[in-house]
Length: 394
Image (cartoon, rainbow, N blue to C red; front, side):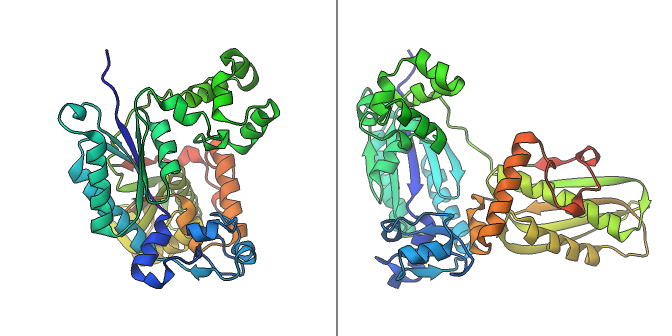
């Protein structure tokens, strides 16, 4: 008989806002918006006080300020968030044998088997208190037999709380919750379920599996399993990838600046798209130039955390000027994005406007669905993916 699983989900509450409040305590208790300008920016994160007015992340800042005119806007500091995340990760790393970091502010811990030696819930409680004490950041966690129920328990425990769902009580805990609480359930699926009178997770538990599969296909079984607290997915420890890179070797040596820049744009686009797909951000750019005699030159530059081409491409072009003696033809060109950090693209909302965010989301949605380079900038269209030999470094 398999051992009972003990899975903890940890989430740092309103992470960006909490970090800013450490540096400016006057923000405590006030509605705070992290993001771009009041005119054309968007909300990257907001405090619980702001959420009461209906504000949420990715909302245009102008709209948010109409809902809550007295809110305080903070531009945000990229370095602070990655450093705070690193501190929390280090505490967890030193305290438990198996964990998975799924974003800049979210973790899963597997305590399975430790119940022979420890009270797992007590250990998780003490770990939470240590994180709060050492970092000054509020944190919530949920504990249950699987990842899905634990994540939902965390959401019920927020803000700054904790919740245990005992073994065998998963269905009872889930039943009264709205179906929108199921992780990964989209708006269109929710609306379709509402049409069939399924509003609570308890309604979904009672639904016939064959009916759900007939209506939703494979998604039907997924919904039924989630509603019944069935989730066998494992905690997968991830060794943080440190860099992502790609190179291009020319068939014959080339000194055409326009052609080289066109290839660089295309390479950078592809790497940036991979970063966003993996929820990664880079804070260092490097370019490599190799001449016909195999002499190789590199140049690198530190930047604010980003996964956005409109920031990366100008930086890469500037490094090319420094690395390349334009009197000498090039045999190989390479780009590397490094010092990677887990974190969704929302960090870039500090700098971007609403139109640009929508553009990136639309490009990524199409490229993820139909393949890389389905949509790209005109400057990168002259070279196709068949010319690439991308490789990833751990």
